[in-house]
Image (cartoon, rainbow, N blue to C red; front, side, top):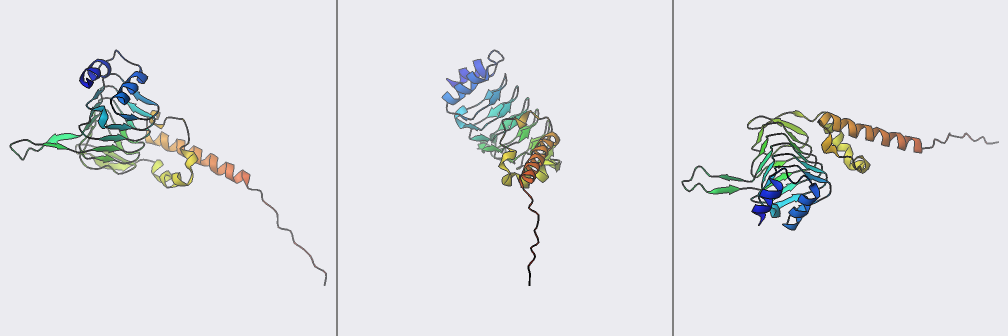
Length: 219
């Protein structure tokens, strides 16, 4: 049944309504949070092997090959044509045995257009896999990866330095603003930095300075 739903609703541009797609995926066993946008011509293998958190954007022609479990965190962006491949084959055997491995995309990860995440890979929080790159090993949090196979080319600008502050200031991320709509890590970092400065300013203004009073005594 899912084969036909996938063909007539997801792998087409005739059904642009996100709510219908999300409802159908939930009906077939997917666990999906809020504000998940699924663009046209997306191919999903088995929705019952898919968990998606909040504020996730899935671009046109993304292929989610969920032979086994794929977990997608909050504020994740899958750009146009990205591939999440949980399956491969063992070329060392004449039987060409199937090899599978789960994929985890942690919060804030960005998979660029036409990029590929292979089986068994974990993409760390706010890591970026650039356009056309191929992830064959785990990607560290806040790293920017490029190439085939993908290697780290640099850290993710100023948000890497702000990462240590986030556990102490949960209000930094308590916002309905979709970070996945920001086109670059630099803009995400500036967004966090502005919120952090506002918190510091509000805390500073809340502190009332009491001047020290010298008392005199008569002897």
